[in-house]
Length: 182
Ligand SMILES: [Zn+2]
Image 1 (cartoon, protein in one colour):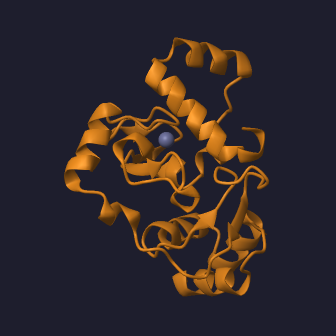
Image 2 (image 1 turned 30 degrees about the vertical axis):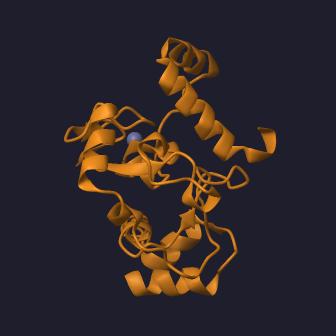
């Protein structure tokens, strides 16, 4: 099954695929987990709308047929612990807390990963200042498919109340997501 999906992605390099299409290839209950595995275990850089502003939610795109070695390996245990601690063991996108049921899928316990703020493909480094804690849901770009989006007024209230360093982190994330507007 995993092979089927991998073959499908590799046969469609550079072509935007929809979740419906992938569901058909890999099966209704399995496809999302398989996409996750291709990204996290096999290192394929499958892009979603979280990575590229020209992709719609539910779009998937593989541009590079060559999987990347897992970046987590180049990050030391100490650096990982430092970033998770600094971020309060909380997903910096949705606020899910490590070990607690995930707010958008309470059948899953929240697991945190490290994500790059500025993507490595854009020169981002494996440094504390460029890393943040992300839950698996946000890390896979799946959270926006299932969650209610915050209204702009709530979003701005949160941003205005946030710590300066977090505001700067939000700024640099926005710049990396919308390079054409920065
Ligand atoms: Zn999250």
